[in-house]
Length: 399
Image 1 (cartoon, rainbow, N blue to C red):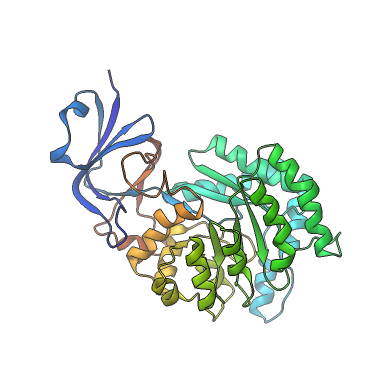
Image 2: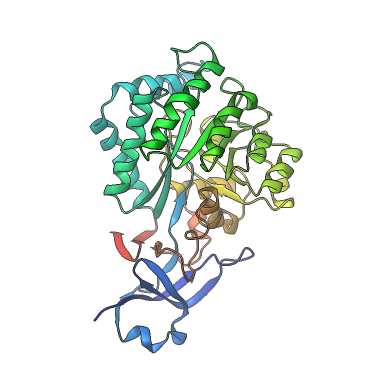
């Protein structure tokens, strides 16, 4: 009787150390019921496993934990091509509300089919866990529709999906008062979506032109009272109070952070908050203010990377490209870049207990890569070295 699955003849990049890749040459992984129950050198593999196992050869490939994209806006309709063209000519137009209008108009099937294509691209590049934000609905029915699409994707794809409520993205056109809109979210929208089981975390855009820390206070208080993990879009376009807001509410992550200062870094560190860096948006908007990488290193704040997949400021699904950009634009090391899409990205989703490492007790989510060195994952851009994706011990994709 087959009880175990063994993956062997591989170089394992375990990510079990903060100082190196945790490499195991000629390594093996033993899987039972979707969990890793043993990992180590092949020569140390207990005979008790091999007698009752299905054996898989990795054919000498490298194996990493499944990649984690911890910040996306994957479900939306339309694009912002005209806005892109205008920006190239120095003209500002469009914005988030353009996508809100298109997404409200689109039905469930249209949204699902578009998002499914994006998610398939991510899966084929080694992504096994994705966070999907709402925020392109900004009214109950449209926000519900986005989150329902995300749940359907989770049911139909071999990918773990976390739903994040981002109703506090920007002020919708039918409201004139930000406090009134936040009250609508707290009193009516979020409670219903929670009751329907559609929300796993709560986010808000703390930025000039979006919402202030004071305006988001009641939303996060409600989230905290309902034991919901909190995330904050913070310090992307200007220096504000987003990082301190994240720290005050013990957020799992603060995201963007181009204008983060030393006091904000210290606040994030004290709260155990992960800094999620989004080089795709930085690149696409041609920003010149970079996140304070040296300060984040100095205070040992965990740094994650994500695609920020969205039609307006980061129209990409490539987490591998974000690793390359993280190194070249933000000066991360290749090791930091891989940590940023595995163990630190898991922390940003409150999943560090089960994802982001090749370790006993962790989910058997891992990826086989046709590379000769871990650095290649950040070195290439425009290439995809992914050969096979294993999700909870089962092959989810093979080239």
